[in-house]
Amino acid sequence: MDIDITELPTPCYLVDERLFLKNLEILNSIQQRTGCKVLLALKGFSMYSIFPLVSKYLKGVTASSLFEARLGYEEMGKEVHIYAPAYIEEEFDKILNYCDHITFNSFDQWNRFKEKVKSIKSKTISCGIRINPEYSEIATPIYDPCYQYSRLGVTLANFRPEELEGVEGLHFHTMCEQNSDTLERTIRVVDQKFGEYIKKMKWLNFGGGHHITRPDYDIETLVRSIKYFQDKYGVDIYLEPGEAVALDTGYLVAKVLDIVDNAMKIAILDTSAACHMPDVLEMPYRPNIIESGKAGEYAHTYRLGGLTCLAGDIIGDYSFREPLKPGDRLVFCDMAHYTMVKNNMFNGVNLPSIALFNEEEGIKVIRQFGYEDFKTRLS
Ligand SMILES: *Cc1c(COP(=O)(O)O)cnc(C)c1O
Image 1 (cartoon, rainbow, N blue to C red):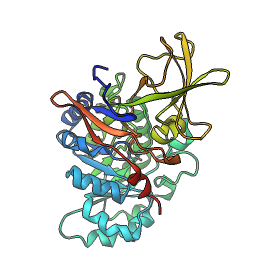
Image 2 (image 1 turned 180 degrees about the vertical axis):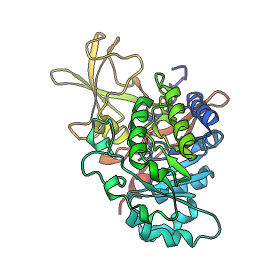
Image 3 (image 1 turned 135 degrees about the vertical axis):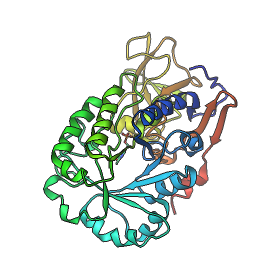
């Protein structure tokens, strides 16, 4: 990394606008080649101080809740789409204020809310149904929307063609960190099962989980898949990646607080897997750290542990060329997506600060958190 982080408060999420811009340009090239629309899934990345840049490239946002929809509406101001497994009656009028597209998870939900949608005269809101094609290639059940008894989307057996009047789109989301070969196999199934209904639609939403900005991603197959549906059915195509927008664009900078020993060396950091990078435990995965290797690769191996008293608050085992000591800084890579949006103050551990780097202004620390943020979530 070529950014001087010695003055940065720790822990701190640091997003590099140059890397972010690269991702936006890749996503935009797909829009330009195919005419599809790419939305940012706020669930994965909601750092709104960079939305002015995002809005120059992407067509809008997709939200999973009223709050995300409002954030997208107020901070991005372009198309706002929403999908949730169910909508809360008391929130629905507000959702109508903020959203242009609403996707329902069941025909019952659609029937419950469709009169409310139709009653809006000031703008047109386009409604869709999420389908479950019962085809996915995800090994981790908690990330697989098509696992047995999944509540996400309508299966073909439960699809009600007679209730489609007013529905303009279908939505499927069955992927997670995958390449376009998975998409190509998925859309074959979607077409086989739901093609006769897609024919009647204005749009089709391919969901998220497309790892488009990864170096080995096959963009040609994605373009072909988009064009296939555009040509066959004349539908508008939406993609709504979260992770791919912010993939490899940010870091979590942390500091070593102490080194303890229990049959191996263990470094305690001022960050936490449980609080600041929960996917390390949930996914689970091992984040990369700059200038480090696997256990045993370099001379000095440590287990890196977090600041909470959860025994399993462990980030992983890493080795370094020099021994670690209190005050050393460690830079975790790829920490922009599914971090800030998921973090928490378990154990009263403070949240990392949020900073942005660009060439003109250098590092800007945008937000620091404190006791008030901890207290106001409790009573
Ligand atoms: C999670 C999710 C996304 C974004 O997924 P990524 O893996 O971050 O690309 C998009 N759409 C829906 C419906 C989702 O649930």
